[in-house]
Amino acid sequence: MSGADEAITGAEAIVLVALLVLGITILAYTIRTGVPPMPTSPGTRAVMLRLLPPQIDGVIYDLGSGWGGLSLAIAKRYPRNPVVGIELSPIPWLFARARLAIWRQPNLTYRRADLLNERLYDAGAILCYLMPRVMQKLAPKLDDELRPGTVVVAYSFAVNHWRPDTVAVEAESGPAPVYRYIVGDPGR
Image 1 (cartoon, helix red, strand yellow):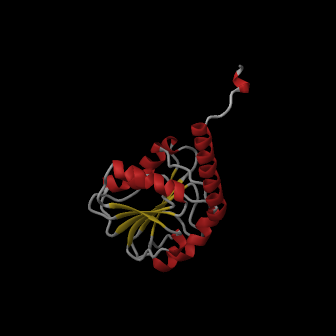
Image 2 (tube, rainbow, N blue to C red; image 1 turned 135 degrees about the horizontal axis):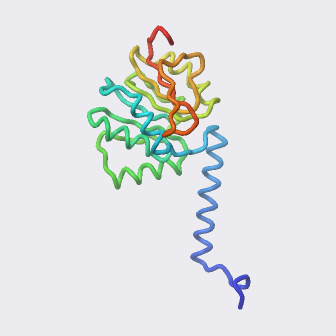
Image 3 (tube, rainbow, N blue to C red; image 1 turned 45 degrees about the vertical axis):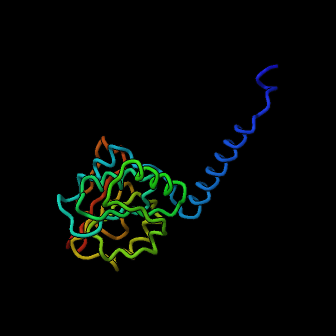
């Protein structure tokens, strides 16, 4: 009997169906949110973290936290701050929750929610890696809710109508820029 003639076993069929369901779920949420669940590379994480101040007053939000790598790095660097990863897509959110169960970080929580509906008034810093359409929708919310002094760090796509105080383009993070904004900065 050749390899082409072999039947798929029950266990293989279950795995294939599970992978298909996972893929369709990720695709559906990518279409719904307009943002694919792209993990932040270690180099990009390092650049984003370097743009944050040594101390932050308030909650640190990772908007569109995806698979949770950036949120976990933030929580380790700022153990005295609450860190909240917000992700709507269920598969990356579940992965991040599983990761947190293994690498416990008491100041980190993951919230499955639409970032545009979350209140950010208590933010001391916000980090995001989102697509232009979502950044455009997010900008008015940031204008309305963030306190002066709040730091916003965005990878690849700028916050509409804001002028960054720093734009980092480093080999470590790839060709895309990392933007830093400080709310209330006259240059913004």
